Image (cartoon, rainbow, N blue to C red):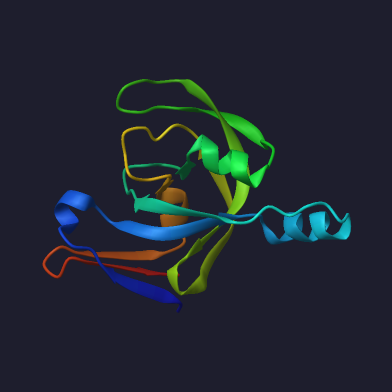
Length: 143
């Protein structure tokens, strides 16, 4: 079972932060390669593992750098608003230890005022085991 454990100083304050990469899915990568289209570089992000988020979210600048197109839209609710229509994209998320979540439907939404560019929601966590060890200030993620 692929996994990683990270130590996060002041975990209770900082939250379960993890370095991640947002990339093209393998089928899209292959299609672009076959057509000799320019292939965008994967985008490195700081992600927050968020058990309160139904879906995974990525900041608009990440989507812009990948140059991918929406696959649909969805209405989202946040603590400050409800029913906001946001674009949805299919992309891959690469986590430490080369754990790849291949076809994630990412919602594009601003993550202003936070040191993150991505929320990893329960759509990703439904495929994983997450251990939040507050005493040791460690997070373990396994798929």
